[in-house]
Length: 554
Ligand SMILES: Cc1cc2nc3c(=O)[nH]c(=O)nc-3n(C[C@H](O)[C@H](O)[C@H](O)COP(=O)(O)OP(=O)(O)OC[C@H]3O[C@@H](n4cnc5c(N)ncnc54)[C@H](O)[C@@H]3O)c2cc1C
Ligand code: SF4
Image (cartoon, rainbow, N blue to C red):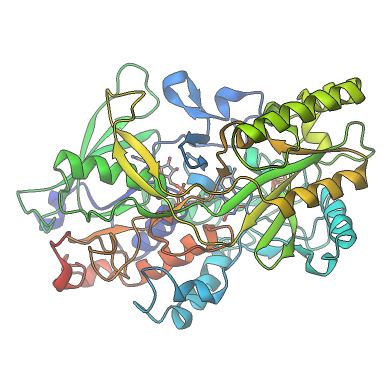
């Protein structure tokens, strides 16, 4: 029996999001036998929910019987939204794919560890080609309103169409099916976008370039084995070789079973952690504490970034046009050098988010803001009782609402720790620490008011931001950042984990600076770069480790 036959797989990739799918595809191309362990379900046009009222097929909380693809995690400093599915966050993301400004390579712990500015453009180009990035050709009524509001506030010249991973017809014809338009016939047939605005509920029309139709599709076609609903719960070096040089043992359970969890054991020579920023931090904290991977750097959980984000918007009952039409994020503007606003929508009928929106409220966070909010709602009820009740109830919300996603490119970090929270001392969880991220961006609120004036509607805020002073974000990055040594980060500039051999992290957790734009294209490009350094199977000596000076230190 050859040495390789003693292992179930050459590589096990944990998680099938952007980093995981790139890794699976590129490793398979290099001749490796690859398994992808994914705790989420596999989604198809047939089983995706039609509206957000199918909560059990939208939300991921398997212990409560919710087996969807969208999760919300609540921390003191942020509510973090993320995806959980075969294809990771790509199933629920809004497919905006933007490259950050060059200056991001000059800050954070990755600065000067590689010639990023020379290397990365090629990887962004590959990532953009593989994800089918194109300028959005479909502007819906919400995008036109955004442009008008920008003109009215003096920033009309900053209006831009987003760059997105959506198959849009060159002649503007929706719902046309073509043989694979992206990979020279290797990929699946695709259908042009019908501008239903449903990207964040999962595309039921084959138009969104999700990973299961791009990278992961190709990986599976070339032999990668995907294990859906399979959660990795333990991972340790084999045969007492503490640095993993003899391979790894990976233990999994069924993530959706309520009683029999079907534990399984697999062996492999190399591992790629791609469970997302939160998922990889959580798993590595558990493995470090349990003694399975004790040499993981104690920098784990440091330098977590959430983008400064605030969700505001405007609701216009009875508006003449259907504001849910278009793509999920069709356009954006810059209201100042640091503040960027995108027009976001959910598809018609997806009204459950309406429970979370309320009358816009300014003011400093804390009890004063709550008092001001109560005053605003009461005075609105007294002045326009019918209209106020109408905007506060959820029915018709998606048709009448434009979400204004406000992002600020100001740097701010938090830290994640593995601790027993005071309110539940029975087990440890990820808990956040650090400076509060602002939930109230005054200029953005002013813009929302202007926007509402244009439509004759109400400017709105997100209720949890007012009540708990906790911002929501879909862009959590960092926690296992790239650095020159385990004293400053968790992986080296080639994403190799300090302290171990043939072990990599390829996901949002390695990002070491504030990007100021949606992160998925950067995660994809970084994973392309990391995988480009892995030797083809025929040439590997299975000895890939971070620079020797740093191995074993923590
Ligand atoms: C509603 C929404 C809209 C968004 N819109 C955009 C956008 O327009 N543009 C953009 O750039 N970004 C967007 N994002 C963010 C984007 O989805 C993430 O940045 C991106 O998916 C992160 O990629 P990743 O490779 O780090 O991990 P992910 O894509 O999150 O994948 C990680 C996978 O690992 C799995 N996993 C975790 N733990 C385990 C375990 N122990 N065992 C097995 N599997 C595990 C998870 O189920 C998940 O599928 C959006 C996110 C949300 C929620
Ligand atoms: S707008 Fe509709 S058809 Fe187009 S990509 Fe999004 S979900 Fe698919």
